View 1 (cartoon, chains in turn cyan, blue):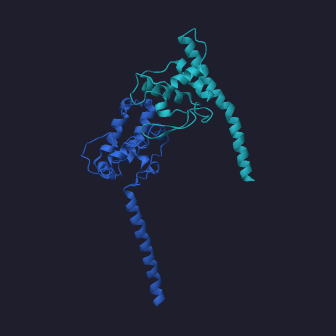
View 2: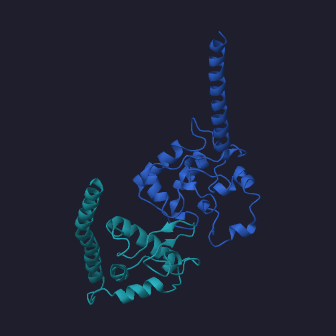
Length: 138
Length: 163
């Protein structure tokens, strides 16, 4: 009986959590949209395909041992990645890690660190939005 | 009369045996146990890229040096905001290997005043790992000397026995 109750409570909690998450992800998309528009008035929306290309491409300019996002995150965004120091990285795909993008400050911190490592510069708002759009589709 | 003497004696011997066993175990494990990070912020900030190394593995001066230059953290920019850095530094130095009440065995053999940044450069660390073949370090699932957990499976819990 208690088991059933617990399961019910968890199900309800999960149900309540979903819309909250979608809101957070959309908040970030809204934020990057505004920033992208400010940078380029001709901005016409994010593209998951561009996001995927950004994620998979081997870029120059960053550190030699991390030429691509996939160097640490792996080829499949739905599975865990691994840092060079051997620590597991939670999957990036929203379908697998639904609470991944609920803390905007955390997302920004990692974009800054990781874009610098891989691209040798910070990512633009358009790049961040493209990438996030792809992860939200995954 | 005899039972009156034998009983306390037996109890005493049993107690001694248990104590000796426990002491023996504690001593055997002492060398390899380094209390893991319990501070949430430190665990979160230091533990996302690598094992959040136990603070007692380095002296306080090392932690201060490290936390003072997070922009150049072994080739990565690991900078955090000033408040976060101050809080983490406080935790690490309070629990450092040479903090009052701590006498970390890993710091044995260090020259006074030294503040190394790499745990792997400590004389005791080098001694403990001298038998590890070079080919083990380059294995794909090891990859880095910072990857303690590859061999010490319970490293995150503070246990660094020879596995």
